Length: 168
Image (cartoon, rainbow, N blue to C red):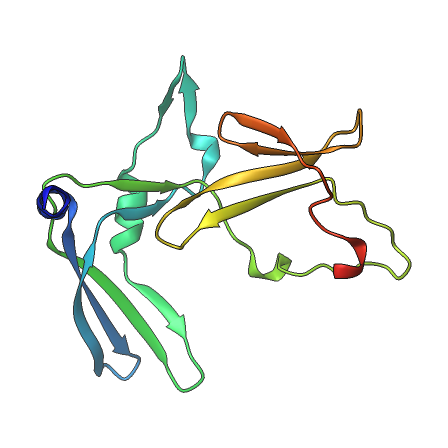
């Protein structure tokens, strides 16, 4: 009962509503829907404009906020469309998710040379679901060649390799 009340309070404070309007290039409105949100993901594309003074990052989020609500054009097989997002109902506390990275879809794959030997010595794994969980790292020490799992503040040696070569 207590967690339900807490959830309700969190929804009241952090939940807002955005209106997404999709209009095709022929000016027909294809979609007009109001969706809930708990944070606004703002792209911080030009990292050179930000600096760290002491331990405080100095930047303005205005450009990222403005870009989020700027109309964007998408190209489709049948027609192009314009997507516009508007703040329908702002939350009491607006949470901004500062995205300081870019993802280049052209770099998703890499062609290795034939007979190329690669050595995997570390990987990061997400444990949990899409809605919750945390990350662990597994590394092979270059000093003793043993495998270790780093899980928050705990470092433990693995008894076996995290994978076998014939699994790839």
